[in-house]
Image (tube, rainbow, N blue to C red; front, side, top):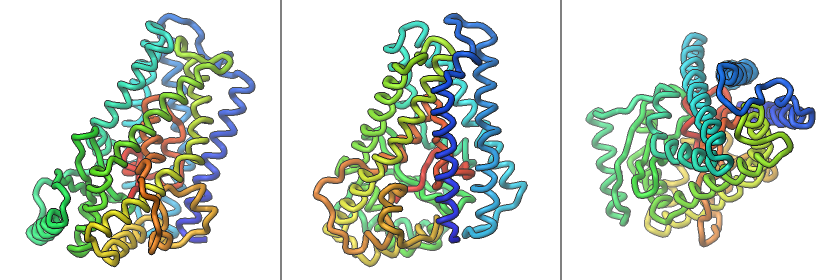
Length: 387
């Protein structure tokens, strides 16, 4: 079994197990019998929230070990030492758990004060904060280092690629280069609309030629300029807000007690699973359309294909996939499907599927690090693999 397929099976197993457990807990209404139901604050609330997070961390440990240590060492593009994995996992888990605790306290406080409306406002604010500080959170969670001074050769390559992109008509934006250990780190686009930054993995500078680097930068600038990145954020934000409020109407759910909030989060887990099935098609369509647009604007198709191939080789190294597998599980289309693809005219929502998972941090989404692309890989828990 290939590295890509082993990760896919791990993600399917983890997500499936979490969904079944969430469904079982909801049907048995266990949160209402095990967790505090008081509507006023007490020390029992904080103890219960901490206990829930501890159970989540312990539950994810075997999956994280398989996806972050065992599988990469058996079949992956890079081996990882046990100490390095443990340090990375501890840092990532601690950061995510701290954010989940803060988010749960915020939602519970606003829910007790203003009901569902108060919690919704708090959830929207948390999502906007996640978008605004995604780069900082990613660096904190994954120990990603920002490179302020590139070496001479790398600097000259970046300057040449930037000039080429500018010549083709794209407006320059700030480029951020991050050091990383995980070869699957792709960078992406961070920041609120109209304040975007393009993040690139410094490890790719030595692997990409100047024209391939220019193609990578042009794709991300096009995603910003044509609005598909903003539409992706809007879809992700709407999916999270609607799903959380819908889940709050389940029997025993709500936002005024720990038991109610836990029930709401279990319902949101089922909603997130639906998103994993529905939203990837929007992301793929946007990828196809952006590819077509950058080629029409002058980026050589060969340069684009080579850059996509090199990124793919350092992620799962799966240039071709069965159509059904890709349709269900992969928001980023395979390299083979992107060659000669006739795209739709409008890129609906670039990166919407995985941005939805990231924004689910705001309501303690428990699928956020269980999917095949990032299970056990803290560097990819905030900045999911993208194109």
